[in-house]
Image (cartoon, rainbow, N blue to C red; front, side, top):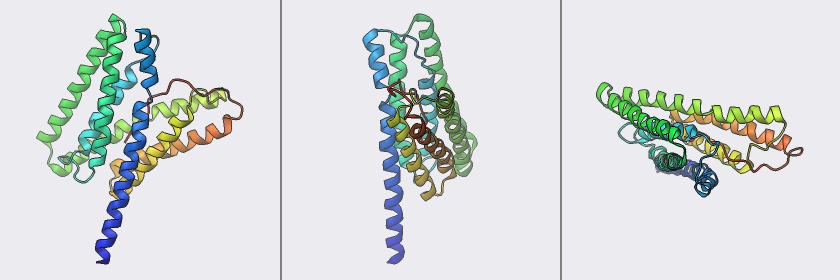
Length: 235
């Protein structure tokens, strides 16, 4: 009876952490909407780059694959958050292609096809060449590598804030959401005993804390912090 109660509490805590991570990630998914409102309004992508959305789409697809029961039973909340993220990133990429110039249309369309091609190869290889334990390890390593490489964005922002001594390019609520999402999925990964979840999100938690500390330090001397949000990683 005690064991059953402990298991129930453990299950509730892990699910709560995963749901919280999904909610905070949703804030990050919708953060580029003002950018795309501007693009649609002006009928032009101006100087914006579509590469972050392409790379985020690939990241979401790989992490989605890792979270499916076929690969990793018991972590469906990783699959849900990344399925939603993949839909958002795909919409952003399609809008970017629709409103960019001809040269970028061709390049971005090629990159979009490449993303689906890479994902198809990863899915095929993982199913055909690996047994279930090795399959999880293979996709898990890919997802960790993808997530850690996505931390180039927070590192860039941190460097920019230190160099300019301004939080102009680091919106507070975006940084807070990134931190809370990383903390949630770090807890979720720990409760699920899954290093492929808690390792990258542990790194994300540290970087998020650094961003918030820098914001607290430099916001006293900074002006407006309402710049276009940068793409960040999600579990």
